[in-house]
Image (cartoon, rainbow, N blue to C red; front, top):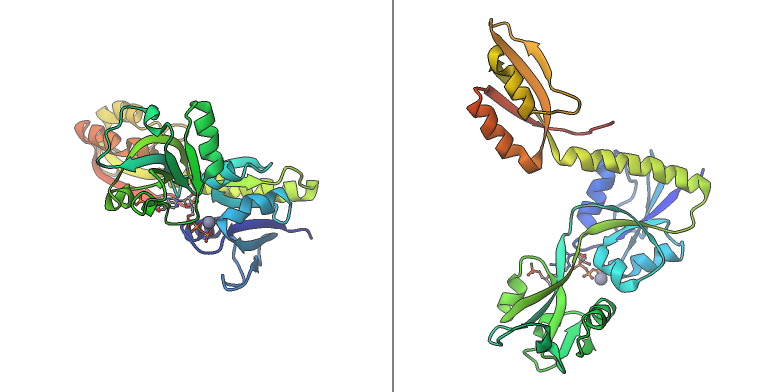
Length: 285
Ligand code: PRT
Ligand code: ZN
């Protein structure tokens, strides 16, 4: 039987979450990360552990069928691959930063300046679109020290919390783009591989959906049930069951993490009691 080959980062910021996602899809892997390749015993999937920079190329060349990689690498490498899903982890932004003591009034600051980066293509594209005439200094790693050692006037790099910039006396002045982990796929998969991919994506979607939702149970006086059901839409509508205690009901539903605390506040106002919130392992539609 054919197997689908997925490339994931060998070690780095994406590795653990990528493996976790595969495990949450109930796919068990045989070997550990010490090898280049691992197989699954219960799903036709093979894992290739690679450097993140190489993943777009390997997928474009069909050495791997799909891959989990930072969107920034996909943009930078500009290979012909399909972007299938955004995964919501390894979120970051790509920004221009300049020395803290410089005053900044807009992109014209960069005119004639040198910008150090490991992402020359994304930067080149941005400078062209914004008609900014600056010079790109391509360097690998430790981009943030370039201004202090006199290699450049400014930098273009990944920013997450911003603390690396602060500790290098730099300030973020323009956000060029945002990035998160994504699934990419080769543009030409055999029918057999497409079938495996569909089944894998079904599992991944199920896992991603359940991550944002919680199962909620509560007790409420019967005369409040109607109002409470309006706050708790649920998948179709909430389940309502009578309690042994007269005049009371138990309501079960699903709430999204985004408006979770708002919903809980409203429920309390409406007289809900004994509210229980439980994580959902899988949500299948
Ligand atoms: O060895 P390999 O080539 O596989 O790994 P790598 O060292 O090139 O990549 P890695 O593991 O550092 O990052 C992998 C991916 O994680 C990146 O391509 C991004 O998509 C994503 N990601 C998310 C980040 C960050 N957040 C991040 N903060 N990648 C790097 N950083 C670095 C950034 O370069 C800067 O030095 O962290 C610093 C900034 O962080 P803050 O929190 O101080 O702002
Ligand atoms: Zn890398």
